[in-house]
Length: 591
Ligand code: SER
Image 1 (tube, rainbow, N blue to C red):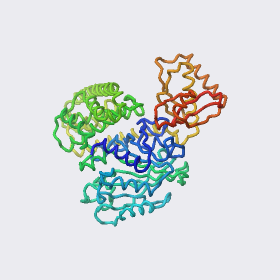
Image 2 (cartoon, rainbow, N blue to C red; image 1 turned 30 degrees about the horizontal axis):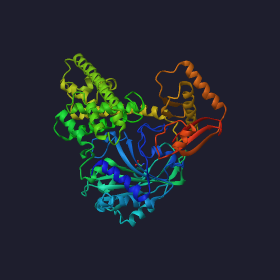
Image 3 (tube, rainbow, N blue to C red; image 1 turned 45 degrees about the vertical axis):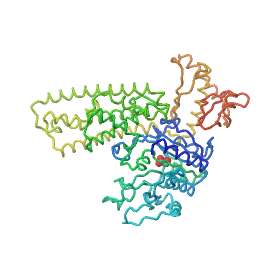
């Protein structure tokens, strides 16, 4: 089965059999949600609706959401972990709950392909449910629904037989909240058993064992709690279902492949890498090949997003830069020495362009940024090698000594900080120059380095957390005000600069609002002052804010501004600032 067919089958299953409405996936770079750098799950763009706001498309939705998760970046290279993936999701916003959700999933997985299902034999599937703790009870309800479909509770010590129910703690079987507070709940996860032979840890760990013989393919979250600021969990008035099925993983298990990288989504990329590098297919080379393929695919999607950004030293741009640079280092280990990021991006754009046409619209930008970043990084690497050579010359005569004693950990760390040299590379160069270091000593040096590096990362993470402390979920009132202010600003900019001004994105924290818009030249100080005055005057008036639902045509005829793209079908929400007959701003807005 190909990715296109799987995407289509999933959507059709829920639209045709269970009356869901298909909605488009959101941008990878979240708008108006300062709690995350990237969309990490299908639920992020839907948080307002999980909290009770009415969704214009109704209470049963289905979508394909592009997601980025860098938390597991060190696991990339194994058979299942990716930094970018597509998540197939069905949603109940206060509509159906556990019974229907489990039945819908079970039938999709096991019904014959001729009837629209995936035709997976039940003995290949096992599931997990929440074991219960002080915050919420053991999810016997979900388990008994699985039992009604023929599953049996796992008996400790028995082999992985398939058709079983396991119970795990919060770490495994709980999802959310997205920020510090918000909707969350127990989940039930569906695993595909690729091999029944156990590893030594399988008895203890069951289907979630990190040998990954069992691959988690689908998560059904029952969002029935709200986590409050005091840490307590309170039952939500609206009970939701949020499910996420991994497209890449499901594709590989359905086709009987060994890993994500064996499907048509990755094969053109890895074939090109093999052509460029001409390397042997050793275990280490395969790992580096996968890192290159994964990171460059993710980078292409970040650059080619509708809100795509270039590499930089902050926020999303920093993650993008690290991904590209990690890919270049992995590529060097494969013997790929020149301009390859742009080539791989070209393959990603070609393979995904029909599904995600924005990649085609933005291909020039993607290619230029990929090539620019690679060139910049390679120049830094050349400078780094020069510094390394000088350090070697300076220490001439000490050959045979140990790297850690002659050069020291600080030197190795500095090579990374200043020149982006991975620790292994520095040590390898020094060993080539005749310095001795046993494997054990190299490992010790690496551990020292990792410790320093983690400290450094923790600092930047603490910085980022502080920056994003004003999360949407936690300071909602301030953020709501700033959101209204973006509507005032949008209107004022059009009054001062002209009607060509269009919103291009916005980002809010409790400390500030950011608003991106289109205008061909920088604003003059006078224009800025005029816009400020208009916005402040309107705030002074304490105008009422109201929201209406109407058709796109009606909104246009009333003179509303905003994006008229048919985002959620024909019905849109229109926010008005001002009185009925004397309003200041009227704007279409999904947020
Ligand atoms: N939010 C859940 C997850 O990301 C299900 O979609 O796994």
